[in-house]
Length: 400
Image 1 (cartoon, one colour):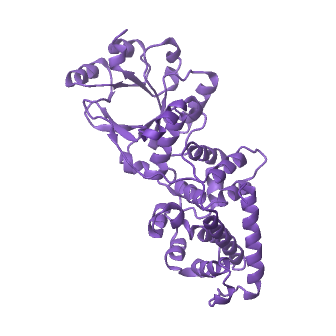
Image 2: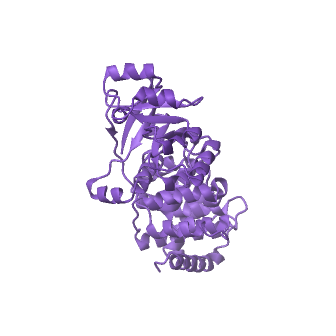
Image 3: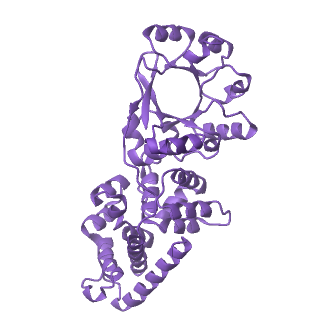
């Protein structure tokens, strides 16, 4: 991806526009997608893989939005994102309603490549910022005429393709308040590693989210079927770009807090990204640990069985995302209890995880230290139940 600064009249950086700069192999796919895939790539990279504050330093990010994305907005903090309506998106009743909803949520909305076209004028009452390609409009009108003939109270005008100091000074006098172009900076390339997402888990989640009869528990179950999918949602919910509440430690808590619509927008971001299946053996092992931890925790009143499930599933997450466990815990901003369990096997969840690991590997005879309150007599039954649950999950995902 690339970023290009947007400056105010004093030369202070106001925001950055994020641009998709795909590897050559993906260029054709991006072009054929009519922009939907490009937007998905940008949102995934910025808000999940790299981190939006690492890219913009806390300033807003302008991101192009196709017609599809307007009605499927990303679940991020409004102050982190300026929704940029592409010039070919018509102001239909449905699109205007989507933009009104975005503004009610606190998002600012920009109209890209305004030329004074009568259809584009229909957007002016519903946007905050109007972007003008000053090199393009001069062929049939003037940049000054666009501002003077389309003034709306509170409307901010942004000049694109500013290439000289003379352009900059002239455009300030014409009423433009924001500026973008090669005079200030060419788009700077940014690089990061895309974490591959499990195709079957993401697609199953989208199916679950689109079923109006499903409960948050059904949706939580769909997410919990895959360790990396669970990792992504907790990373997303605990991200500073989404929420500043207390740390979320279970998938059910995350789904309840975010709501179905926000989770659907997030899942569609993943679906538009590059997907890949994970090794079945690794998935089986992670799910086995998760179910065993959950079942054991139900015998301990002082523990939360959903948190125990997450600890068990995340115990192999470093293998899924190819990062050291310490970095995984840090990126997810896990609670001290979960981090202690995953990094050192400490605390009650660490004790449960040690037992669950041996049970998932079929080494019941090696279990020595059992958390007080758990009867070793239940181990065989718990192990068998967990293996059955794993088989059921894999069949539901269509890979058993």
